[in-house]
Length: 282
Image 1: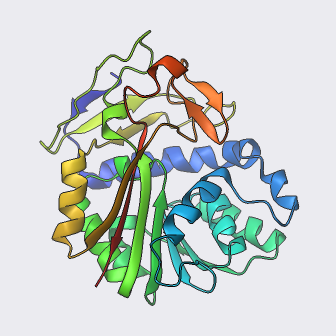
Image 2 (image 1 turned 135 degrees about the horizontal axis):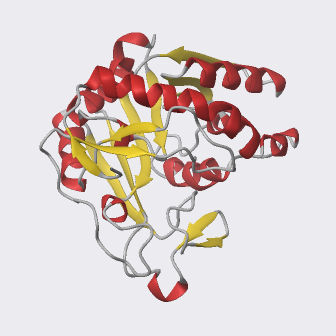
């Protein structure tokens, strides 16, 4: 079943995915090393990686004092890290238990944040106000079937001159067989027929434990589709990059490196693991 293409409407797929992500909350609350945040200077690995890149393309060259909307924020560790880096933050997610955990975590660490429960595809109308930065990272858009609609939400949330940042798993990575002994393509890179990939897996990418709702649905997106959606929404691309490391172990063959995981050294330059896009609303 895993990776097979199926016809499913967005509402049914969304409900299945939300149940799965609700189940992940207590597991991730343990496995995300949240005790590290007892150090007031601690930031998540994702934010320590992303913010210096983002700041190079901000008009102020700093995130301090900016209004940041964090889409698909999950349990809020990256959102709290954005606040600790100096931003005023709003976290957005479709999982009520995730936002409850995020809210409690922020309060525990003295972080003032706003939290909005909504599908990311409705964020433009569900979130009040506009923002200097809309941020999303990592493992996000594979859960969305309609990137044109996604990009329109980003455009609506950004104020004039605002900046969008995404770092995510590379589509070429997602085409690989994660269990193969070499870099072997298994899944489609180009998709575009509207069907979803179905997965049945009780595990989660962080720590141990299992979920009760094991069925999830994902939509692969090529780089061309991602760029096309952002450009079509009226955003201007200002930076593109590709990276060699991931913040999670995509394949058992990956080895731990500072800040995440990578392919064995002799294969590290053969295929990108992530892409980063920074865009601006003029």
